Length: 351
Image (cartoon, rainbow, N blue to C red; front, side, top):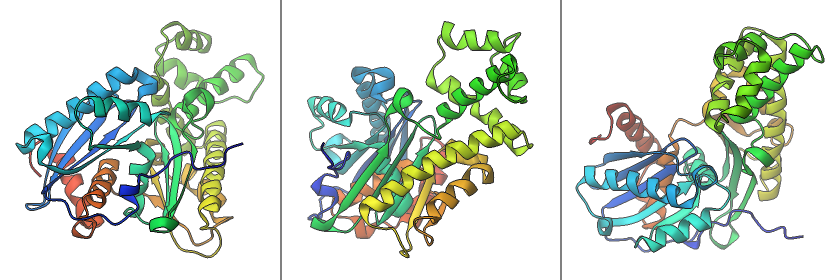
C-alpha cells in the first residue's frame, strides 16, 4: 500500500525562489459555501477583495468550482486595477478531494502560473506563518495538515478531508448529523433525553422530530444547511445538555487523533514547541470542544500551542504566494493578519 503524503507541496513552496518582478500577489480561499480572493499590493501594503460562491468541486462540480474561483479572483483584480499578468504569484487554496482536476481547469483558462493547492495547505500557512506546525480545519467539513523541515527535508502529511460521506469527523456537518441522530434516539427512547429534539424541530421548522428527519431526505438538505444546526448544538452544550456535550467530546477525540497522526508523521512529537492552529466555525463552541481536543494533542506533544488562528485562511494563501514569488521575507504574518481583518470589515475596496 502507498504511504506517500496525500498532499504534496509544490517545489515552488518549499525551495528558495528568485524574487519576482510583480508587486502584486493573489491569494484565494475556496470552500464549500463561499470563495474569497485577495490581491495584495506589496508596495503600498493595500489589500483588495473579491467574493464568489462555493468552489469545492465535490459540492458543485469542477466547472462551477472553477467559475467561482475565476469570478472571485477577477473581482479582486478589478478592485486593484490590475490584470492577471501583473501578478508576481498566485496561490489558490481550494477545498475538495481532487484539487489536481481544478488545477488542470485553471490552467486551461490561461492561468498556467497560478498554483492550486488543497485548502488545508492555506490553512496551515495561516496557522504557522508557513513554518513548522499543524493546522486543523473544522468548519462545514474537517481536515488536518502539517509541515516540518525545510527545503529537501520538508515533511508534510494530511489526515482527513475525505468529505461528508467518508470523513469530516468533528466538523459542523458531522455535528449536525450526529445531533439529528441523537434527537431521533430520544424520540424512539433508544437513547437519552436531550434538548436537541426540540431544537431540531424548531431549526428545521418541523412539527415533530420524525418530520425533521424526513425533511433531511426529502429536500434534500445541503451540507451547509445540516452543518448550520451545529450552532444550536453548541448553545445547548454550553447550557449543560449532556448529550450535546458528549457529541463535542466525541468530535474532539476523533479530530484530536487525526492531529496526533499528523504530528507523528512529520516528526514533531515529544517536547518540541510548535503551533497547532484551529480554523473554522466549529471551534467557536469554545472550551466544550477545544479543551478535550487539546488534551488529546498534549498526550503526544505536551508543548504544542493549541489555539484558534487569528488570520483568515486567505491570508495563508497570500503568505504562500509571497514564498512562491521569492518575497517571503517582505511579508510579516502579524502585519498581514491585521490587514486582512481590516479588509474583511471594510468590504471589497482598498484596505
